[in-house]
Length: 239
Image 1 (cartoon, rainbow, N blue to C red):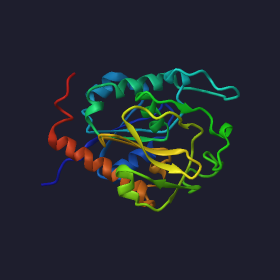
Image 2: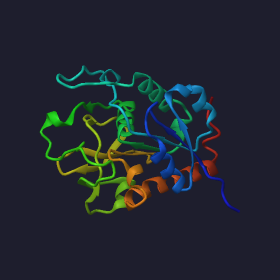
Image 3: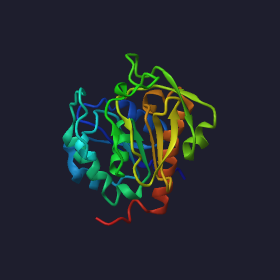
Image 4: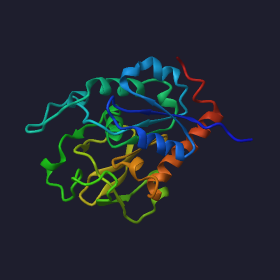
């Protein structure tokens, strides 16, 4: 008997181009459901999610991690989105299902766990370009997986990824560990200590059709979502 596709909720901004995320989830065997901040908490509570994807987008506002705005950095934060996504992550349902954070999504997860962010990487003397003016699917630098599920997927050798970010993890949040880095020390992957939350700094949704590691991230999420649904943990959570 064919198992029903698990419901994978994708949280994205009001103007985020969400199709690549939805396609990647669908190609991995999940049933994608898109939620934007305007949908509100009620839509998340009604979604019966088996897994969660936090998509990329605008920089997280520094007040979310109790910092001032770095001098010389232009911000256009999406405060409604920050509030919505952090509120969702605090719900019992979100804490019972597997999560994949992507770019901004990794940063939101780090902030949710009490971590902080570098607000603008070009100010910090890094060797790599982390937001070059190239197509979103261009492979621009190497990362190395160092731990966790990502190392199981990618192996020990460096592999190329795209890069579309100005911010990155500064202080790591509680309950997280680093799973990948660039040669210049930027955190490119984190995972919760219990293995439920995976996050990467690059954009695997843009690469999944042709990039083995990126496709495997979505396959892993859907596989874990099936296990969540089978165990019933996505249903038996408090309201």
